[in-house]
Image (cartoon, rainbow, N blue to C red; front, side, top):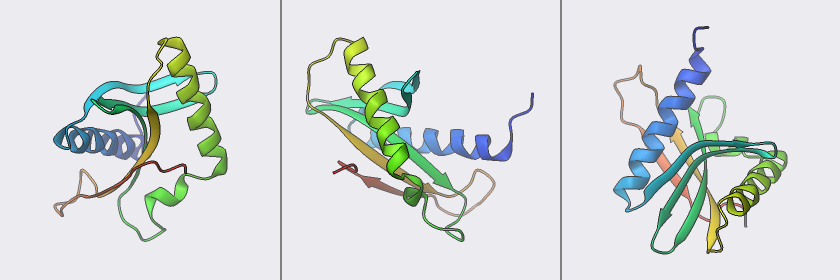
Length: 122
């Protein structure tokens, strides 16, 4: 089945977010982690700890900023999936949840805007 525009945009945004985090000194440990509790777009790490990253992408801010889509229900699913990942991998380390907001499009010639919200669920 052909991939729709929203899926294409989302995958593109996740790739841009991963590139950005690597440029910031992170290593991408896992992409699109799924479990019964939820899904994590990116799991990144550096010498400080582990980062569960929710990526939200919009082609423009006409209908709002991408980070606004991380509501209470989404936060619960992210936290549950993060805890599941830690248990599954038998990890005991410092961790946090971040949000990376991406505004742009693979179709557009304009520059991509990326905002990284660290410790986003506090």
